[in-house]
Image 1 (cartoon, rainbow, N blue to C red):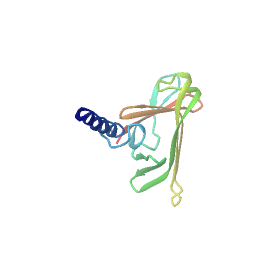
Image 2: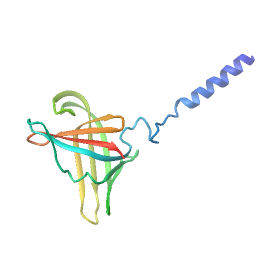
Image 3: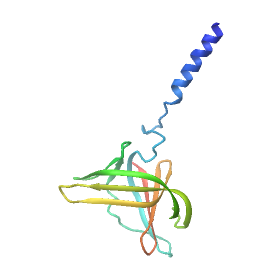
Image 4: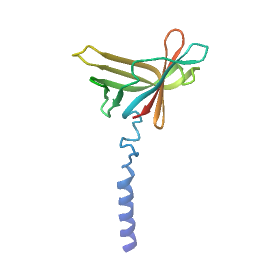
Length: 152
């Protein structure tokens, strides 16, 4: 009987702790985008290689929240809005600029400030999360744009 009681207590404790996991950054591991990010590099590939360009997002911090809301802060500029990641099937350009076809994730971010009239619209046809960074790409007419974000 005592053995059965001990086993039951151990089983209950193990079950209680199974659902409680967070990584060291304090955001749920199931939502890799949640948290603060800074743009590390924006570059274009026009068949002559990758060339960095100024996107206007380099000096700010993007914050993604669990509830789908987002913000961008840069000095006195504060934009708010929403984001979503969706799973889709079809053609896309990967982080190396290669055309692929299949299942992948897309990222949409819409931010604005109604007082200043400033806004940011990001519509990436592909996004991949790799630990403390994520890379998002899109085709822009003459080539592929790639944005690499790092945890802030």
